[in-house]
Figure 1: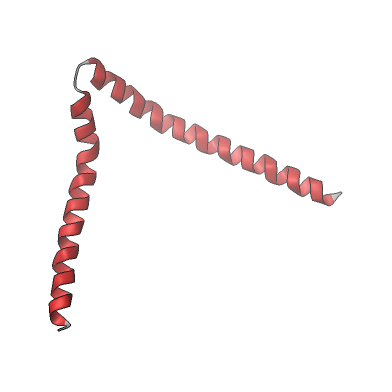
Figure 2: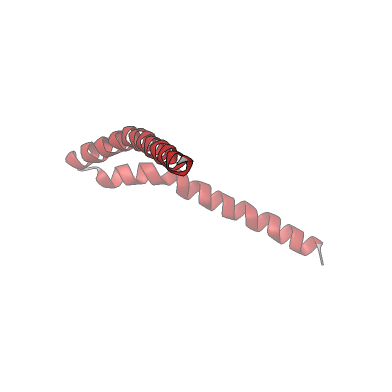
Length: 79
């Protein structure tokens, strides 16, 4: 008898958590989607993607560069 109550409580909590996550993501993606549509309507969709992704490209490039500097320094020092 207690087993189905636990299962029901877990199911209700899971559905509530998923609904909360869906609502939070819908607020984020609605703003993102409106921006994509606006930039596309004025012919600047490529600029939108450049603006959205450049910070990740720069972060990745700088991270790899500094990793290589430190790796090569440690590799030379270990010899």
